[in-house]
Length: 314
Image (cartoon, one colour):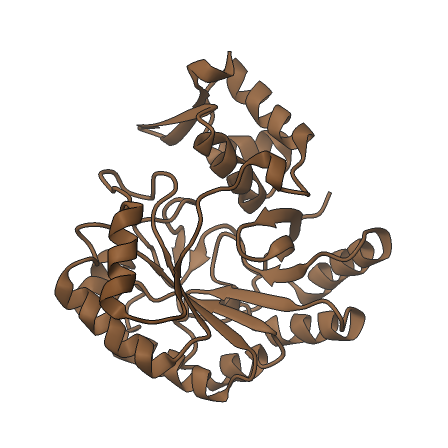
């Protein structure tokens, strides 16, 4: 059982992806209202070696020696990977060990104004930054950043990175009605997207309840109308969770373990990770599919979001 690697997991965008987690749970520079992993527990902009390089590379060595290659090796997790000051070193290790396997980095983009971070990311094949608002007001409302990270610096950093990076950039924008879907917000986003000039623009919305109560997903029609407003040929709506029959790496044993656990009592995401010994991102992938197929339900209680079996599961 690995502590800092997870999967390979079925990714909607990257096929069969081996996840690499470089920060502890919810160490992040943002506290986004929509985060499926819950509220940020350590809000910071400080880079340090949160997870030691040696521990991560030992796990990677063992995985590479005992498993087939994934479609992608992906830096992601339940926090912001660029906060780890050894990100570049881990990337270099993967490049030497598996030069033929593409590497992706999922980032909130807040540290792209840092020259060291930009240099480290040059070794990646694909970077997927997020940009949910291009105004200071919207940015603080939806992303709730670490103090001192302004939207101006955030945008300058992404634009600078896009001018230097030779790989692909897929820009993700998550729409929450009432937060970043006003005409003014959308037109400002269009202006900034043009300056970033990513290879793909990926529009997304809530799959499951976020970190705060009262959020609602945008409809597919609303997302498509935003794409029409922007007029970018490379914009797309991210598909909902796929059917399990279409996922080559879908583990029936993991699904059964989740269903059998919550059959006994409702559990939070953290409960499931602790009981099953699975990484939070891996559990999230299965919850996405189970909820999309109406096999589980979710309710917000004092201790957080609890998952239970639906009537369809009996």
